[in-house]
Image 1 (tube, rainbow, N blue to C red):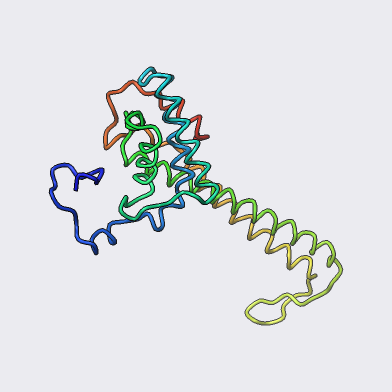
Image 2 (spheres, rainbow, N blue to C red):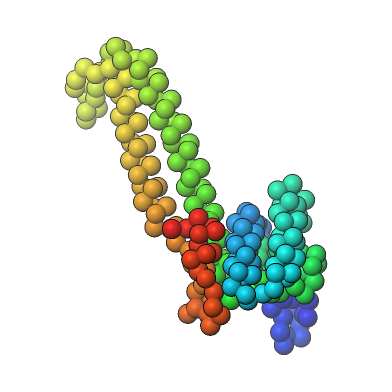
Length: 220
């Protein structure tokens, strides 16, 4: 049991089926890029605030860079026994640089990491959707311009009601997708706040600079 990061005083591990139930790395490994970005920003803040030495910061950043490359290249091995993406990265960083890896978690809890990773991932997903919606709108506008004189019936209550053009009909979908973009924009604005600094619950006594970390991660 001592091999478990959270092992503590437990003398035996959980059953095999409980390990499978408890492990989330099968799906949260998609947060690896965001977890690494958050760790790099947090490390930079710790160095600037004088909470860890420049040497420790350089070692941590170097280790995280190596892990980033492995993840990007598809060479990072996620282990079920380490349960989640955070512990997998933490364990690998420890393998690479030793005890210095532990200093990365000063003034930061796992709750901080989860909340930050999730917001970074969702923000990136929203930005990708925005890009795709713009492409759809552009394609519809091009098609609408090509059919500005193409006549078709407009329907209401399943009955032909007015004469319209196919181009006009397509522009209705441009407006619908514009509405969707507005909703995603609202969601992005609400989620784009940095949760780092909350700690396990109610903050930390370390003199951290939340604004620096938020700026580094492009939070509002």
